[in-house]
Length: 109
Image (spheres, rainbow, N blue to C red):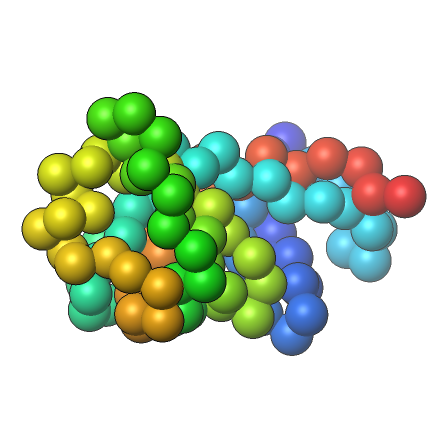
């Protein structure tokens, strides 16, 4: 049976659906297109929302790759229009949000 797990990543906890037993070393992966960015924390059903600082912004065709330091690294992929409307740039504070169901848990080392 699937269960919600709290995965400790450097003292920050990511909620995910996982069958791994508590205490097992795992890797938590989130696809960049599954991460939404906002300038303020919003109420939503998403279980994971982390404040962070943008460390790098790279244009990739019609998309923008945004690297964020949330106490752990995250990479978000948003449309160029969204990046422009939010004024995303290096050093800006944002909230990175993703669902527990969007976290892929794989066996660690």
